[in-house]
Image (cartoon, rainbow, N blue to C red; front, side, top):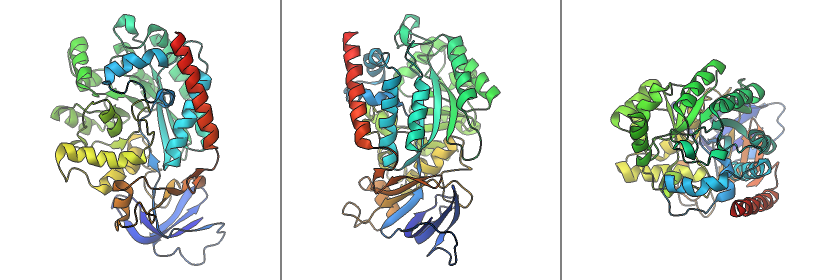
Length: 452
C-alpha cells in the first residue's frame, strides 16, 4: 500500500515532518517514509491512496481505560472521585460477561473510529459467577482488529475492610493472584507485532491490600509483564494513604515494589517535586487522563514537569463514566489546554500533545520499538486524518489543525497494515449493531441494579 501527497508527521526522535510526503506499507510493516512521491518502480503495489488534504500520523495509543463503564455513562454527574465510586460500585458489581462484551465493543468502536490503533483496558471488577469477563474484552478487541493490552485488575479490600467496593465484588488475595497468573499464561503474547498483551493491575491503594500490591509486583516480574494501577489521583487518596499507611502514595508505591520502568500509573495529579523526581529516576510511566480528571474535579497533572524529569507520559480516555465522549483524539486538545491553564501558554505545544498520544503512549505500554512513530521497520499502525474540510480549512499547520481544531475525520486507519477504518466507518464491525447491543445491555444492568 502506498500513501502519497499527504502531510506526514513521523513523531520520530527528531520530530521529522513532511509538508507533502509518502508512506509505503509492506505487509504489516512500514517500508519507507519520506518527502514527495513514493519511490518509482515499486513492485507489487496493491493499493495507492491519494492523501491530498490529509495528515498522516502514527495511530493513537490509549494507555488507560475501563471499558465496562460504557454501560453507566451520564451518572453521578456532579461527584468527586470517592463519591462517584460509592454511587456507582453497587451497579458495577452487577456486571456479567454479555454486559462486558457489549461495553468493550462500544468502547473500542468509539476509540478506533477516532484514530486509536492500540487500546488498553484496566478491568478490576470480577463479581462471582459473572463469567469470563477478561475473555469478553479480548474477544471484542480481536473482532474490531485493534492492538490490545488487557490489564487484569483486582480488588481484595471490600467495604467491610475499609475499601469502597461492595464485598461481593472483590476477590481474595490468592484468588486474584491465581486468576492474574492464569490470564498471562493463557493470553499474553510478548512477540514483536503482538496483537494481545496482558499486564498485572491491582486497582488502587484504597481497594487493594498491601499484600496484594506487593505480591502482584513480584508476580509481574516473575512472568515478565508490565504493572499498572491508579496513583495520586485526588487529595482524598493522599489523605487516605497517610492515614492508612503513614506515607503518601508515591512512597507507598516504592515500599511495595511499584516504581520502575515496567510500571505505569493512571492520573498522577497530586505529586510533589520529590514524587516527580522518583518517577523520573525510576522510569515509571504515567497515563494522563485530562478529561476524566476535569469531570471528577481531581485537578491538573503536572505534565510539563513530568516530561522535563524524563517520565514517560501517554494519554488515556479513562472509563466512560467519567469521560462520556469515549474518545482519545479529543484528549490531544484537552491535554494541551489544561496544561496551559496550570502552567502558562508555553506549557505544552501541539507537537508535544501529538507525541503524548502516539510515541508517549507506546513508551508507557513498553512498545516504543514497535509502534508510536512512522519509521521503516516499525508496525504499520497509522492514521490518515482529513484536514481540508470546513472544520480545518483555514489552519495552515496540519498538526495544529489536528490538535487544536475540531475532531478530525479519519479517512483511513491501519493496524499492522490492515484497514480498521475507511472513510470514518469501521471495516470489521457495524457500529449501529454495537450501539443497539450496548443500549440493550445498559438497560439490563440498570434494571438489575435497580432491583438490587
